[in-house]
Image (cartoon, rainbow over all chains, first blue to last red; front, side, top):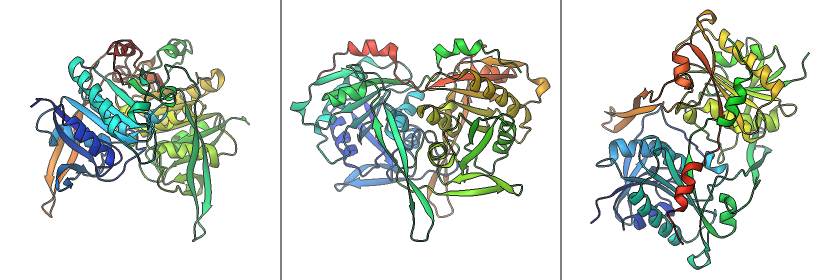
Length: 255
Length: 255
């Protein structure tokens, strides 16, 4: 038996199929503890719960203990998971398998990636993994490439503060062309709001929009996935615009 | 009258004192539209509302129309504000004045900064502004330095994708020593959970923690504020770890 302890979370909720596939696959390389949101928490970004208490319940799947459900966000789950639910500090945290790509601007909105980012702040290596499709499909290959990557992370480590963001095309293994190490693309959404009137004559708005791919090339996450490659991006929340910093000093803003 | 249109938001909610001070001050340089959360939305990060409809209500303060309250997050407010509530695309968006510092890791958790970041994704310049205190105090100087910075932004522009994150010491103007252009510090929280039992014998957890300052120097945001300087950091959500990317390619991860 391996001595590795791996914490698994997601943002689609503890009953999602992706987290079950991920847990099963990772048990090959270590002991797995699951701490995930009770309800779906997509697009919650890096939200943490400060004003409400968190509660935990033990959840069964297929008749056996599966993991801990938390009434909070993915970032809450990993914080509480690491501090209170794991037997010791985990060696690795893996977040996913998310349904839908977390590439380009989606990285910022994603609860899946934010959970992994929260973990790096706590000084533990982490991986986020998503399938580039919103439809039901096979998680087998995505779980497999995650295990392969996880082994490398446990072997080599990651720089403090950096996580790996994996996006897998929604294809069977034999149609995947390979793995590309990529950067975050510049794609974003062209949003619109659909304005409607409810049966009580009150106005409400639905967010709609379509993603615009704004750059391409073998080094871009979105392009890799579209070209049927697995995309792996090293992600780091170092938010200073170093280039503009120099110019900003020339503005001579004074008290 | 100026032709500038400025959208104002926050994460403390539309009835907070900080947003009122900000609106009043910015009216000196343009027309101001307010779109802010109906309820407090601190630490929501970059959350956006996808699964629920958004509703808008017109809010009065001091007997006159003040702005639009949205039942969503700060990121929702600026998206909906720009697309549906402003008469035309605003020239600038300002988020604040937040109570509590948004320095170091807080930038990631902050609804105030995330609203400003969402705006830069939409291609509009933005500023986030916070006072480094959680207690009630004077907003006058913070509003003043924000107006000064806003004028410069309207004059010079900002690089596409970059926002300015201002943190102001909670001091009267005469005790402020000046303005420092800074980088995001590496400070983070040492968290703990306070485990309690409710009157129904159910366990719950409160997040607690204290901030650890992990670096210092005249170029660090937290240090500037502690030294009684205004801190202005150019913030950019370009999340690729370029340095590690090269090393990661050597891992030779294969399909």
